[in-house]
Length: 316
Figure 1 (tube, rainbow, N blue to C red):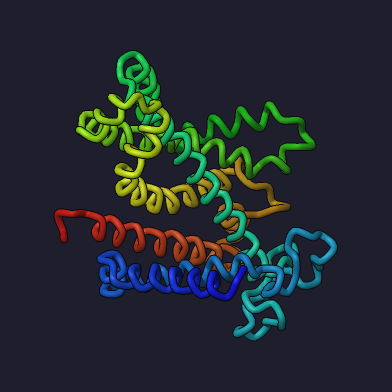
Figure 2: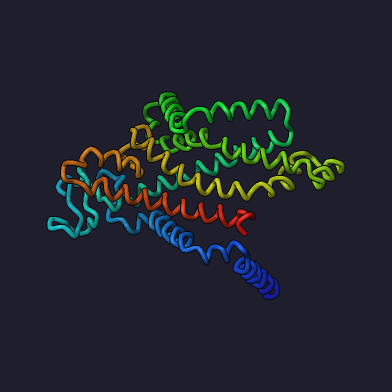
């Protein structure tokens, strides 16, 4: 690449950054203390989870690094606390800070994957149902109505239990994360589909869509290039809020014992294991995972609430 081309590319990047900083969304973000706090907390939690191998004193997933002689150590600021176990250890000698950081990685990964998968399924089915209508719309929306009539957690429990029974015993622990993503997706795609369907029905009657049809533009191109961009605003808000709900659903399933195994604990698994010793004096085993889960979900909800208000044209 020539120097002139590099300079042009750099100028274009600076121009996009300047336009972003002059946008209404950035202006709204900089004037929302709750959004800034949520973004800061979420960024710190995600970076800490990604850097878990660098920040953690041990690998909690490696049984060789666990020592029963170091079990039930209190946090370091208490009399019996020991370095480097800053937040203490559990009944197996597992460092709580390491377990929380590695567990957060699993919870965040499951949340992100389930949102992406449910968003993909919901967008696709919502576009098809809204654009074509008729029997296709009726069939897809009736399936959605049936799923909406069942509590989300029950659908997730049913799917998770059935999928686990179908897997060979040696693959159940390995496939736990994939099963959780599938369970959360099947209970979450309906919201995206109904939102996109409603927006698609409105957009398909507008003149630019009718003009594209007259020009014999393929339906797939009309849906993806013309209709889809005009449906993304409410979807962005729903995806942000559902990210927090996906993390909570995973934690609930793991707490009930049908999520991640104890050998690869997520935040929900850590809470379930620690809850057994809540009244035995080992309070830190359950308190710190609960605080981590609360911080993670609250920060996501703060961002989601700000995004919902910032993208609402009635509030501008």
